[in-house]
Amino acid sequence: MAVAPVVPDTHPPRETRGWYRRNEIKVTPWLFLLPGLLFFATYVILPIFQSFQVSLYRWDGLGELSETGTFIGLGNYRELMTDRAFEISLWNNMRWLFLYLLAIPMGLGIALFLNQTVVGIRLYKSLFFFPFVISQVVVGLVFSWFYLPKEGLLNAGLALFGLGPVNILGDPDLATYGIIAAGLWPQTAYCMILYLTGLNAVDPEQVEAARLDGAKGWKMLWYVIVPQLRPATFIAFVVTIIGALRSFDLISIMTNGGPFGQTRVLSFYMFEKALAEFGFRMGYGASIAVVLFLIMLCFIAYFLWSMWRDERVAR
Image (cartoon, rainbow, N blue to C red; front, top):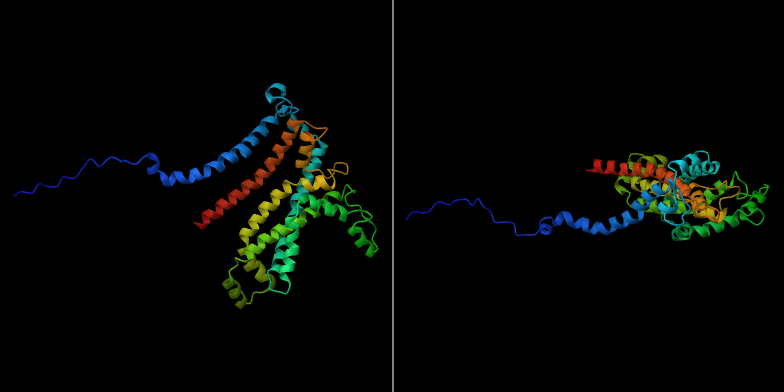
């Protein structure tokens, strides 16, 4: 009996699964991300473009922008170039930016001290954690009392050394530095927490190997410990720089922009122009916000580029 040859089937069965089933692995992560992306686009991306638009108008915020606003192009930005208060605010932001970075080495130093097994270390940790959990308003009030010319602890301490009283918050040249010192208190505690977490991930075998090679003290810290703390340092830089550029509440509590407007920063000046009692210049305030956003964007772009570069090297 002859056997018929097997003929290959040139017409495979049609795919019966639906489009979602065939692309489930690719689509599912985006479905989980979709609510967050919509929220981010609505409350972050859209207001950014609206601020750019409003900055091109003279508008007091009453009524619709298209009806009550007057299009003036780059007029608000030209006014910023000759605004002395804007120049002072910008320089104060630069002071905040550079001096606020002191929180990172101070946080590292305290974390190294607390990362030991000595008697009462939990009590010390609680004391250093304390400024991180209290609000900026309380920090501002505490330092305002600390700086009081007659009753403040600062001048009481200076009097013990025969030094005269200093009115920190009343001196236009010192007030900004006094507020930055107040801001460093909780920010140092935050950096300390980041470094304490990072120190728990330090490889003990590398430390032991370095110790056998004779490394100790500053060499051990600089060449063995600090390189392993790079992720914590990166986050500390990002949070500290953004915090410095967003400084507002301490200024509002401690000096309200004074004396003579010498402690203003861009965010506070924007609030005064756009929303304060004698302001309501929404277009001008929006142009200040755009300048502040562009400064932040430089740092954010650099940090994102650094993350992308590190991930590419790790692959």
